[in-house]
Image (tube, rainbow, N blue to C red):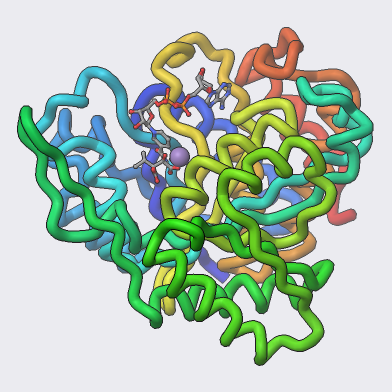
Length: 352
Ligand code: NAD
Ligand code: IPM
Ligand code: MN
């Protein structure tokens, strides 16, 4: 079968880590005899430079027709004053494709627990997923405005928006350790009061899943104190953004975390949770794991290629276990050296 993949490398380290992800994809193609057709389109700051639009109608149309979309990262100081910024292009893409469910897995195999700035005995065995609502909340609520005297953002959630993300989270928990932590600020926010009510209603359909509620401030603390206590966390857009960057520290680096964003039907987007890292861009030192693992998520979640996804994950873990690490994890490997090591391990691992 032929798979049509749109590639949006974006800005900063985006193209560097995307190269790593595509090398892993090509190695899978070779070992498993698939055909992945990848086509590049300008997006983000690169879209502004090429087409005067971070998300041109041509790029969006290609995304809508694709089987899946790989996205590097966007943004940077060069475009921060643009009328339509790269970040606005990213939010527009998520909205246009209806990508309401952002899945951000965090895993710390024992073999890499020593890489975390937290104590190895605290992080070892952590294995949880942040399910972040991605097309609602304060990111999209109207009205919004700001001037020198006053600024306004609106945090709006409908019952249906809350229900569908909770269903995704419960379905996921059902296939895992059967525990959901819903994170809100129901002691203060109206949107969180509705959130909590709807989560409890959805929970009635999943009697085998245990539901707990945490306020977001306490959750931020517990995440670092006892990360192994979590299975599936479900939360609104902004809380999920912040908590998942925090959670990345458990693995040792923001450069480790992949994500998948799904809609109702139509193509999903696979992207690292981090940004374009302008501070290290162009130095060939970014950790490409986030992108390589995003490719693995694409194989599993869009194409049902479980064995192929597992082959990438196992190969990457073997490379890290062998002590080949990028500088964010205290190693000396460049982005391209790390990528090459993963490629060799995928080839060596064969069809498992
Ligand atoms: P960032 O995530 O780009 O970087 C934060 C820190 O993590 C930096 O020190 C960076 O060097 C480091 N880092 C990130 N990814 C890494 C990797 N793969 N390997 C090693 N180190 C890595 O966040 P920021 O600096 O606050 O934002 C930079 C730009 O990225 C902004 O324009 C922001 O809006 C944008 N952004 C885009 C996305 C996206 O494309 N999805 C996500 C977050 C931020
Ligand atoms: C992310 C990013 C984006 C977000 C920004 C760049 C709009 O931080 O993908 O996590 O806040 O969702
Ligand atoms: Mn973020």
